[in-house]
Length: 287
Image (cartoon, rainbow, N blue to C red):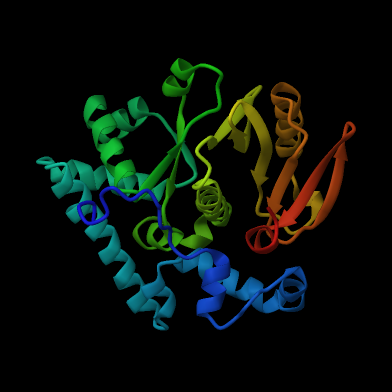
C-alpha cells in the first residue's frame, strides 16, 4: 500500500461514528435527528467503541468473526507493513512492543520505562515505536511544551488507530471504558485536523494534573478537552476541573470542554464556563 499510495497526501481513517451509523442504516442529518434517535445512537456507540470502525468489521454481524478480522488486521499491519517495510529482523521484539502498546492505550509511556519493563534496549524501543507510528497502527501524542527539547523528553500518550483492534488484541472494553472513549476522541480529533497543516494535538500537565487534549493551531491554543466516563455532573472529579482551569490560565484558552458519557450542560469555574458534551453528540454534531 505504501508503494501504491506514494505521492498522495490524503490520510484515510477507519469509519467515523457518523459513517458507522450510515453503514448501520441510521442517517443523522442534524442535531435534531441525533436527539430523536438518541437511545438507538447510544446503543450503536457502545458497539462502535467495542469493535471500532473498519468497514469489513462493521458489516460483519457475528462477533467472533469480527474478532478474527481484527486480529488479522493487527497481524497484517504489523507483519506486512512494519516488519517488511523496515526489514525488521527482531520480529519477536517488535510484536512484543506492539502488543504492550495496544494493551495500554490512552496511557502515558516513556521509552526508558518501556525499555525497563520489556527488557528491550531503549534505542530499539525508540526505533520500533517509530516504525509502528509510521504504519499508523498506533499514534503517540506528545506533551504540550514551548520547547521541542522538553516535548521530546516528556512522556507520551499512546493510542490505537482503531478501538476494535485494541479491545480484541489488548484489554477488554469493560476494563477500560474511559480509556476507550479517550482513544475514540483522539482518532476523531486526528481526522478533523488532518486537513489543517498547522493544527496539532497534545496533552498537558499543570501541577501534576492532566488535561487530555490541547488543540493548537499555529501558535494559538484553540481548545482544551477532558474525557470522562461519567453519567452525572456530581461524578466529574474536581481534579479534572482543576486541571482545565489551571491549563486555561497558563495557555490563555477559554474554550473548555469535558466529553462525558451522557452528561450535557455547562459548569462555571471561577468565571470560566466549561461545556459538558456527551460523546455521541460530540462525535456527531459538536465541532
